[in-house]
Length: 486
Length: 78
Image 1 (cartoon, each protein chain N blue to C red):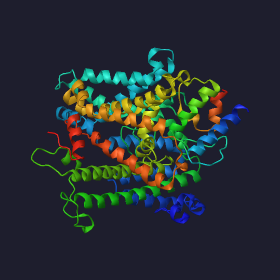
Image 2 (tube, one colour; image 1 turned 180 degrees about the vertical axis):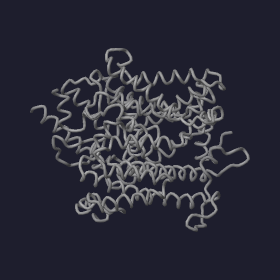
Image 3 (cartoon, rainbow over the protein chains, first blue to last red; image 1 turned 60 degrees about the vertical axis):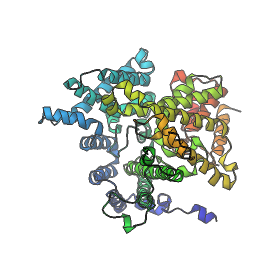
């Protein structure tokens, strides 16, 4: 029984001393890079240049920070930036030979932040240096409001929105730099530029956290590098297995209507409607209640799988570069509380909210009332911070609709934030029983089913469609229980 | 009981709560290694406030300060 409990599909290679020793030698390094590169080619078209960066960082670890900076800038130049593509295409029509638009806008954003960071560090007693993260966020929001007031066809409009889109993508990276400004591990600002959107990918959420953290988890010797890379290879191949499972599940659940060939020649499918279809169900087409449930559950698990694979590939590349980061998603189905799931599902986003919102609120307010203190700080992070992060990410929608209409269209997500933060607060306050004290059935089945069930139902309100009202989402919720409201 | 012993006893209790029955050394990484998470750091903050009267709001907060016993000791007796 104990042997069965210890079984892992991919063995813990990073704990085998002989393999760790082999991975420090030239043939071992080459083999690891080749294995990783081969696996990566199944996931991304950029595998070749990613391999080139990782090879350089493997053989020249003493230059890792400089190599990371170069790799990051090359990747940023090659990458497609959806938020910038539209203004860029307008600019190209006006100035077809001007190829340096993206690098210049990026340079402008970096120079702006360098000036702000230097001012904050050199003038600690000035008002803007007291709460620099809050001030940067307020400044960004004010710029967004101002930008929506400019005539849409003017060149200033194109430049400002491009600047805002790029600044918005870097905002939380800059906040980490501001958070780390007193840390002894923080490198020089010029080198920190390599940590803003590192070449291994990610989103507006820094993977994994800021420069000081990255420096801390960097391999300090050949043995640590070998362990980090073995863990990287292991995680990548785990991600590939999950990706295969995701494809198989999608075939079985939804069929493969848009593809020429069925996955692995499997013709069978349950033909469950997509969550989008059941949520947008018109008057002419009513799905039975059990089909609504199936669509919701299938969508939740499908997203969970996709999300795990996405995060695993990023962290695997990070580990191959010599930074032994924790996973972004770690066994979410084993969560023993609502707060635990939130920690396991999207670790680096949760850390961003904790570092930028939770601790500042927790350390300042309601110190004499422990329960209110915890509730308020949780609300500041999982509610306010969460909604703010997602709202500021949608610069395209703000540019199209205007600031206030875009904010109003976010009301469903605001509701989601309120429910989520309330649930996490209650979970933290009352679910204090140690997992080790729970019975096997409760720990491994009853509690995870309750926790995952809660997040599955809450995911109704996590839809990215901003055109639906809160009422539309509640109507769908009632339909799950066969209650129809017109 | 001196400050370090008090702190170490608290951290051991915290680790037990997280199901990690391990004896920690002065420089063992607690958060970066995945042994504890940011919610555990929160409990450390409350412990330091109550036990040593520390006010981190004015000092500025850095989660790295809580990553090892020796780092936390630097907060308690700088």
